Image 1 (cartoon, rainbow, N blue to C red):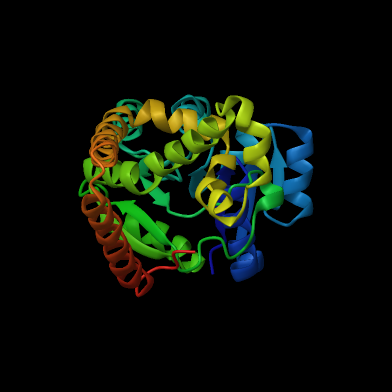
Image 2 (tube, rainbow, N blue to C red; image 1 turned 30 degrees about the vertical axis):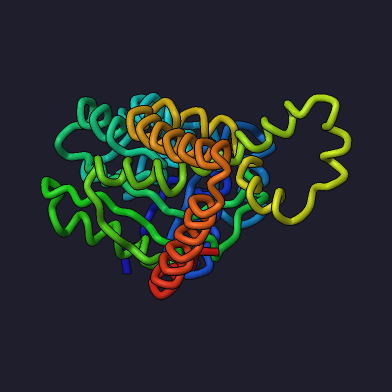
Length: 296
């Protein structure tokens, strides 16, 4: 059996979790190399078993890779591909874990030669903690994982990648580029912005801040948990999915405006209907989603 050679660029939470999963599943059937930002993270990636080798030498990391998994913040992906491109072998497959796809796809297709294949991906998983120390072998299991189905990619190339990614036990689905970015804005990007806004609201409570802090309980912690996510990653997401995010934020702003109007008018029935409809829809959505994916 041919030994698969995988290079992970950015052995953090996502990249490290992929490495842990594949090493446990394939053992010596896969050789995983990793590119990390510091000596400390290189040692951590090797010590935890996420990679066989981690280093800063681009040729050593990607030079013989069959698959390169790109997992840095989104704005770093294209510059990184430009750096590693001279060392990639013909037929190498690039895929990524970026939370936005349209702009990334456009830029990569401007620089990649015809014999290097890019298949965009987005695992819909994560934690509020970052770094390889937060990685876990089961991070992808039963979670949604989007693959952008590009008809220009030969089927055998797609299957070569999927033979590896399916070992994560993720639930794969396909979307086109624009649909992915719109859906990700609503399901992931705007909720992170809203969670950060709630923390900002607390910080602006002025003389009431110390009293507010005494009241913090499960509701505040649950609704703001994702505000503890990596700031670099989320700043890049906002810059690379600006249109879809701002469209969704303006719609959210409209909804909040309707709520403000109803409260100002003392319209209890409108507020009751607002909560009732939201509860019913959320319960229905989660019931349907839980039949397909792990939504925890």
